[in-house]
Image (tube, rainbow, N blue to C red; front, side):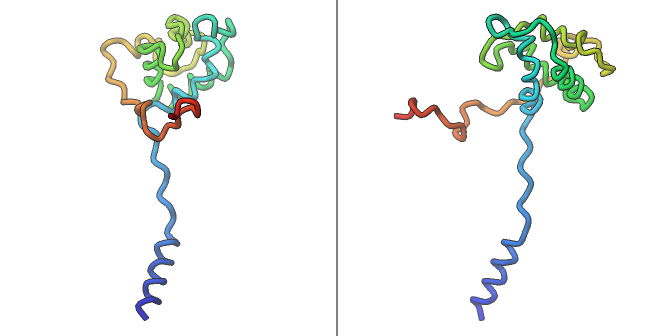
Length: 137
């Protein structure tokens, strides 16, 4: 009898839906989505183009429309955030190239020294990140 109750309880717990995946903290999604802009905003030798891709403007404008445009302040304040140098002037110029009605005069003005603090990014030394095979000893 006790075994039957235990099995019923176990089945009841197993039938419960899984909790939703936790949201990425801070600006991770916006920074990853910024990748179509990298060929334009990267410093040599990574600057692959002199024109802004339409996908870059889509990402840029979408972030401002959703209220997450401030996440691009990471890119202005830490131009090596992706591990290679970015051209700060080109990053700042995206406000002009991507003429959206986003209510922000420029990325520079949004990210000025009086701007609010940015949310923390997750640590890159997280133990969940795999190391390259040849570095494990």
